[in-house]
Length: 71
Length: 139
Image 1 (cartoon, helix red, strand yellow):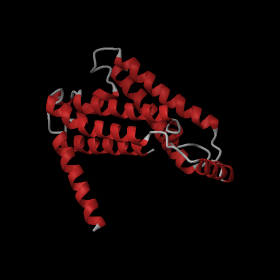
Image 2 (image 1 turned 60 degrees about the vertical axis):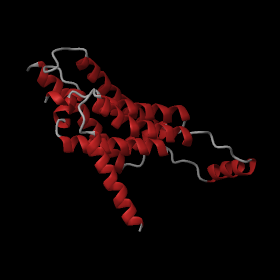
Image 3 (image 1 turned 180 degrees about the horizontal axis):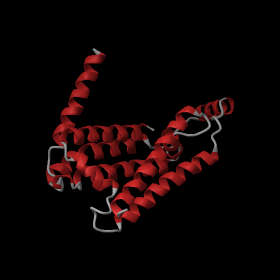
Image 4 (image 1 turned 120 degrees about the vertical axis):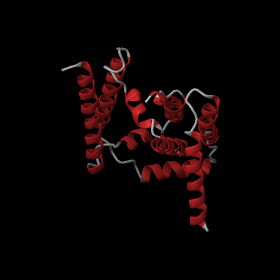
């Protein structure tokens, strides 16, 4: 198995686990969803700024510094 | 009247997203088009996040409300599971990021570039990004 396949299997496993846990959280009241987690962070002012600057970085990274032109 | 205003705002947002994602990366028009909603949302958040000045009466009313309606209990273990999952994803991304060549060790960013090469997808992701920013700003 080459490193490209191993990398993809790693991403697929982790993203599947995140998706399944989110689906479980939507059904079980005791398990917080990702939105609940963001709400916990947003309780403090520092947490709200952390979320907002993370969001700003994501947009800049995807749309301004993106390498999609090469595809 | 309200529906027509909503439709007008949605149309304007889609038109802006299409225009903003039509520029080449690393170009000044691109930086400005992405920077306008980014800075506008950060500025609005700065306005909203200011600590509200409560009157003593409002503060007591808030405490009384919190005592009558305590927040639901959440499993602390479940929050740790989220931390472990997201932490593992970040570690995996960093392991791949520091290895080369990129073709053999793709990152989430390099894999998303193939999708973002299509303008309609790029526009949809831009709209989702702005919606997420508005959600964070309103919290």
